[in-house]
Image (tube, rainbow, N blue to C red; front, side):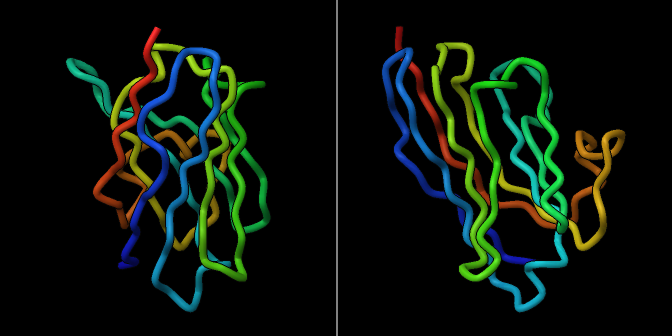
Length: 126
């Protein structure tokens, strides 16, 4: 299990940008696949983006060309750069981790990940 703590500016106007961070407490950080999930009222938690230990990246179609996931293994930190934000991006964003390779099929499965952060609320106003 890895302790994950999300942080970031929580409110922005449509069209704006913000960056989420997720700090992890593990010496084996570079071995982990990491992801961001979004939970919105009335919906199931959905995978937004993921990054493998080799920095292969995966995105849900709705955020491609707007969001960028990245990792800093020296600082044990995961990032999600969010540009051209829309009101429909509003929700609780969670950081997730698993000490396995993630691929194009499993990256969006919640059950694949073994550690979760508490989430950070993002509100995009129109």
